[in-house]
Amino acid sequence: MVRSDARENRERILAAAREAFAADGSTSMNQIAQRARVGAGTLYRNFPTREALVLAIYQEEVERFVGTVPELLSELTPVEALRSWTTDLVDAMRRKHGLGAALGPNAQQAITEQTYGPVIAAITELLDAGKKDGSIRADADPGDFLQLTGALWRAGADRSPRMLGLILDGLSACT
Image (cartoon, rainbow, N blue to C red; front, side, top):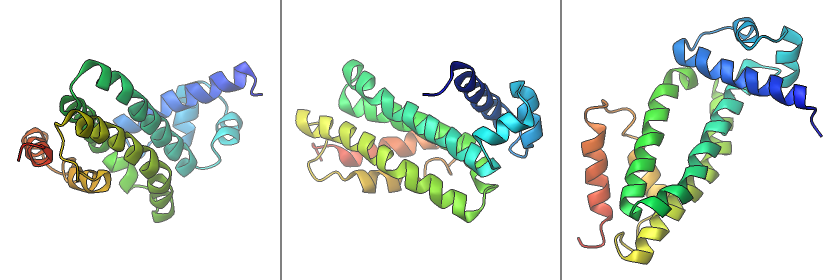
């Protein structure tokens, strides 16, 4: 069992790192420790490398996104839930792009391996809800959807909503 002070330190480190990396992807580990008000030893005990810290941030964010699916489906139609969820995911990907590009290929691979399954599971849940109510075509595939929407974060923020609309139109069971 993790002591409460150790858990609080870890949470403070993650929060400080999220803020720091959002402002400047090249923030040093020492700057993060200072921002989190912990010693360097505490930082490195929790996250032995910068890549481990970035991976933890990505993992936490993916868990948050995946966790929003049931609430979205309880409040919105499946297509609108998928639109909202995807828009939020694309915005997060856009914010994290510079940070991910600064990591080595092994860390990028680790991020992909750890996040792909949960993201596909969330997309599957959203698509299945639409298939069930007849708003999304039966052959809609979560992997295809993820690949198509991967282009959205590279598009300008002004273009991605229109492009997402085209993707969602293509999923419509009424085509």
